[in-house]
Length: 310
Image (cartoon, rainbow, N blue to C red):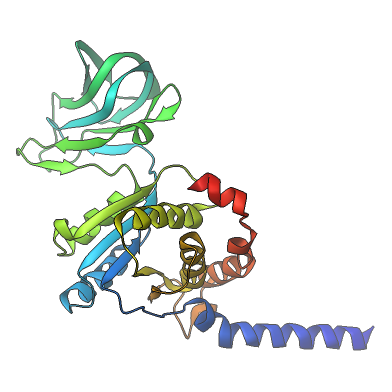
């Protein structure tokens, strides 16, 4: 029994040392293709977007594509702001929305010729849409805060049980200042907004959202971009992602594109799983172990599944 325990302890120590020495450098791979096109995964944090912006300023990349799945419907509105949700075709159905807010705040919903006043409440409110091309949600408050704090939160808008982000083709927030801001129906749009804030011109960034999630978010994003690239003649590109997620991302995009040539990867520094000290952070262990478990993921996607996703 003692010999067995010693062997188990020795094996544990060896595995731990191998993970500490080699796991991060293997997963957080960087291998640029030389292309000036960069695909940016939409879940990057602000520091990651700043790194991408630095590459733009250095002239490394001049065209950017952001990927990401559909976001939950969630917007904060100041007094007088109006959220406009547009649809490609007039839509009818049973809608539901949750309006939270400050005391004495409310929302006015304009759907075609119908106007509905909704108080701020955590309870979902239901109403009916009839041939609605644009849905407007206006924030109102009889005592708006002087510091500019939002007065309402408009969330969880669904139509016949489907998120409005899945159905809309344009979302804008009209501010009281007269400015119109693009909404964020997907994490691809959120990443685009982050890159614009970091100084990359908006006309150089194209969002490529993945509608629906099948086979995991990474695979869904890879499939959506592969289809987009094929349709727009994009033959070479690099992908930017966070830390140890790089190798799985690289494999997924190559598999989705059905080729390896011309597809590179850039691993951005992840402060929660930093090379050289990731094992000191519990989150670092979670991220590394997650990638170990997911190693077979791209290879398990069948040809039938690929066809369905395309």
